[in-house]
Image 1 (cartoon, rainbow, N blue to C red):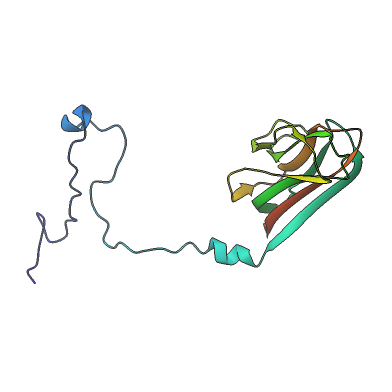
Image 2 (cartoon, helix red, strand yellow):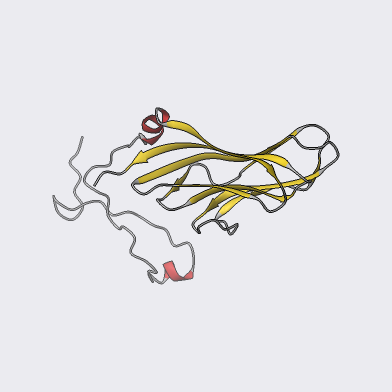
Length: 175
């Protein structure tokens, strides 16, 4: 195989880019992009799923006999980070025919319903005895110390039992 050099024996090969518009055609750069290849390119494997698989746990908070605008909260303690894989609000012991609307998600504000991500269920006329609303936060989501996971009722009958469930991986931070 022939020895290929690009200008000098130590020069790295240039990355060839074809103009995709007027600005690249005029050689105007909007950002610092690489122009040469590195000496070595190697693949990588994300080890986080293997590391976290052994640390999964469920966090629960339950409150009985709640009504409209009742919220349950769980805070990430100082010195820990949590990977959140799922959050849900569940309502049980509901009177048949009652209207129920649940919400669950994450927040960086202490005990408020102002949230960074989550899901609000439609108002549902209950035909049975329980309803579950699963959150739609980007999964997995890294939660920093002081952040909150919450579940609550926006519309509820006279009383129901509310449960907050979250599937997390708890990561301790050592100083």
